[in-house]
Length: 297
Image (cartoon, rainbow, N blue to C red; front, top):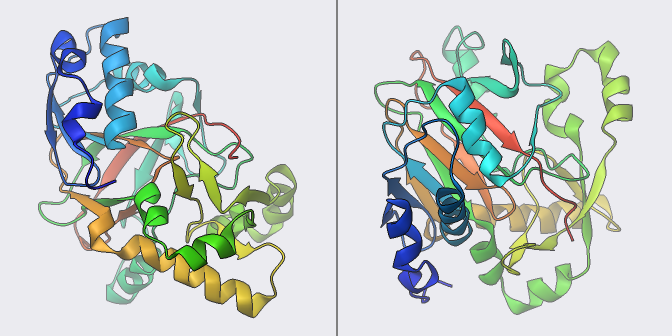
């Protein structure tokens, strides 16, 4: 994938007609996009350009995009219907805008900060759902002066880089994705049984096919994938650990340093991300709108 000419996959007339500029952020994924303005609705030409760019670059970065809540929702709707979250709190009055806070209210001393940092994981969002999200639009509300970056990894490139024997080993297998595996400690003990009933574990293919690009994507993550189906505990832990470690390879990644009013859009079907918790005692607050997805195949 790295040897494909990126420019040939996004014709200049697609971006020029929409008034957008594109600066690739790395050789594998990511691009910084300029020229986006949202005045009321987003016209069909702009929407088509944004969808094309996201399929190509998988994560799009925008600077100085001071969105109102309504504009945030309008931008996300370019990709489809929206959804909330069963655990993360939302912005008052806007159930589809998640209020994502970092160490604020959760870390009071160095020991607490060390515990908070252990929560950092490479993950795709809400894979505990039968139909995990298609993507998300994340905007910065409050950021530290330094630190608090987010990294994304290309899950198709990760799969492509696997040895042939590993590809053969995981072909056709599924894995269990469980809400309580990651969010269990945020749910009161007396409520966990109800959450487990409302959001039962899902069994997704380890290798999914992206529904629009046809790429094969490695679809396990450290937050929600609890085990590989049909294997004993030791074998599952060994193989799953190996697969999860592949997302940590820098050659598959791009890193974004947040700035005031920055906005990032990513394809959750084709990437994983990692928010770096290196900023306490500074504060970091984000708002995320999540786009409904489809059942992985």
